[in-house]
Image (cartoon, rainbow over all chains, first blue to last red; front, side, top):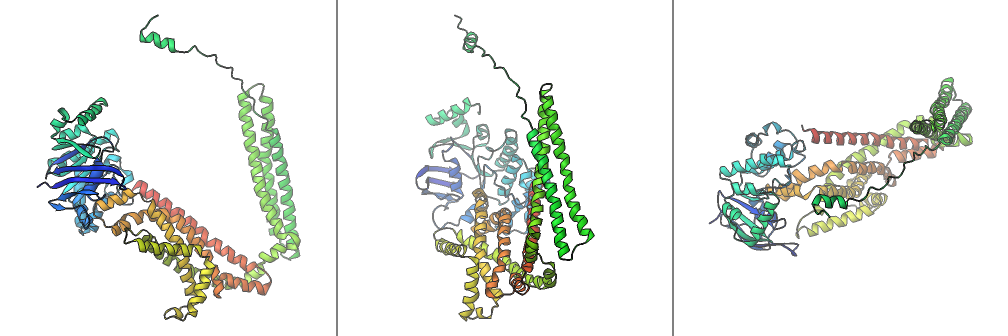
Length: 248
Length: 376
């Protein structure tokens, strides 16, 4: 049994615009799964469905064998255990870095203030931002903000971490500082699902790469196979364009 | 024909087009404007002395004149003579610019620009001073009719304490009402944002309330609540004073307005903030309380203050219930003294309390922005 089982998931925005047309995917514990594909193929939507930010119209999603899609599911409980980091960071601008990280552990998990702070400072030290703990987010660079956003998700001690194009809004020179953290997390065995355009990075850290197109998984496999000898016609065409653009 | 790419490129380049000759345009003369500025200043100075003399005469007839006041009046009029400085400089510069056109056109332009600016400065200050002088004349004209009606210092002095004591009533009403409105408005705003199908009836009733009390004139709301509810002789309600009913009515009316301010503030917080909060496990209520409302509050302070100033002014409507507030008190004084001067005092009091509030909010916004920018 996989940690996360995604079975024939369907989703149409407003019931009209189809985004996911029957996605089936298994995410094993300690795996890093990279979702690649052109814009609008459903990568982000799939991630948002996994932690219940979007409801699905058909199929099912299971976490540890427990169905977490459909009516009656405690979504707040699900989201406590499934962390997500967004493309645009979405830090809370009215809270300091420290408060951003400790807010959910204190209010949602009921941790003590001192305990939450200690853990937050530990995590911030890991990303070398402990000296910025009392700053407000808009005093930080994009890369720093994104690192804080990752730490904010980690402070909840998630079972799975979803990363939604987390470097797409960053200046090129800030990308590596964010990717380094993801690399470290993968070494520690954190289960992660990444929607990404960083093909080189996907090739390096992924246990499994999935090519999504038109809301369907066209091809999945180990990164060497997908990037070197893709079997599917569309995967090949997509990767060729990436190479033409000099991004792989 | 050579078919190398370089040769083809050269062939595609069009022949250079002859450039048209640039004729430097001489600056338009500023002499006319400068002359007008001089005349405006002269007229203002004349008006100033005439106003000073008129006010002096009025004060003599009131046996209120003194050397000190005369010095101040004529000093003010004399002050306008200073306006001749920019006007004259502008005029001279305009003349100089005309002479320069043939020798140095760039210098002529700069001098003309200088002349125009000085002339406009003279005109601007002349107009502003003239408005002040006209107001002074307005007050003392027709044997100081306006002054006697609105600015009778004897009446003001005699009745000042009565007005101020009554104004305390207004202050009590608006302070209590504002606190209640802050809470009540937020409740309504949240009710209007109640999620899902189960929230529909709550949304509906809250919307109906806002529609009703936003459309209802405050004076009618006060009248209905203040006279209607006590007459119904209901438990608890029958023990309330007219002032309490006034507070209740104002809270109901302004709660509707302020709920809309809250709602627009809440809706102005980007949905990605909600997504981020929900994804961390915050419930709907926690997301509102810890993430959305704190950000919304910072944005709604200015419109909220506008509504508060409006509420403060509307406390004068409680006179329909017979409550002796400042306005009602001043009306009684006006009837006894045949002068509206006490009402003027009330008007000034209302204006005075709102000005510091405006400044305070400016400060709050500035401090908040600075903190968000610099951190800590």
